[in-house]
Image (cartoon, rainbow, N blue to C red):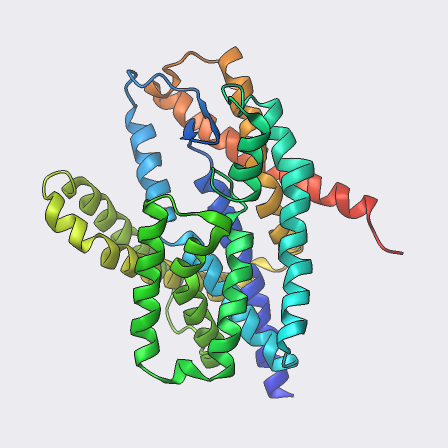
Length: 359
């Protein structure tokens, strides 16, 4: 009985951790206005315009969040995979079938019937010479800009990690060095634009998925306070700002140190968010909104980002090209985008669940 209670508590704080991680992803998507790729894009800002202090601070905050929010997502998936394996050892055919249904079918459905139409209506492919080509390779083959890369990459990670677990490789110390090397290689491939079907991001994040699996296995309680985690996150943020500002001054040093520093920020930033979730989950579970978000975290991720393009397409009718030069405007638009995309995605999720509800 005691073991069952520990398992239930563990799952509860992981569910709350999913909510925080999802909201961090949505926040991270609330500042881009110019995105260009060979497969379409948007260009709303005039590059000759300056940026207000609040806009710069928001960009630093988003940059800091980007160092750990997707590694955290992958670690959460690793924790959940450990829990699922404890309940039922999955055969390889069963794993492929279940992840196809859970990941690739939503990827195709959301891409074709939701993300691509909203981007098209928002003018994402207005300057494309061959729109169908750019949609096919940019969105479905993941060579362009699409937030759904995570879903396809996670599918590859599950396939690879199945064999890592099957041969019990995580007990060997050398595997962690290999996983870090694979992570660096995947990040380098991404920098070179080698993004076909999300395999390079899968290589980068396999390490963090494995870390999450180990965290799920250890399942230790958090002895820190919420104040400790908030202060630690603030210190990490200040370090990130200083490191970012130093890069133009010492390009050779920072380029060598960049990946180890980013990996360290990913582990420490994600670890402190994880600690906060363990502390806050019990305090927040009585709120209806918390439970609503817990039941729709995956849907929030799937449906939120395409709404950004709708909002960006409407902005030229209400603001000038240099709207980020104003502190008030920069903060206001940041908050509006977060509220609009998060609320809109939640409404879409609830609507679709009502339509396709199984009796």
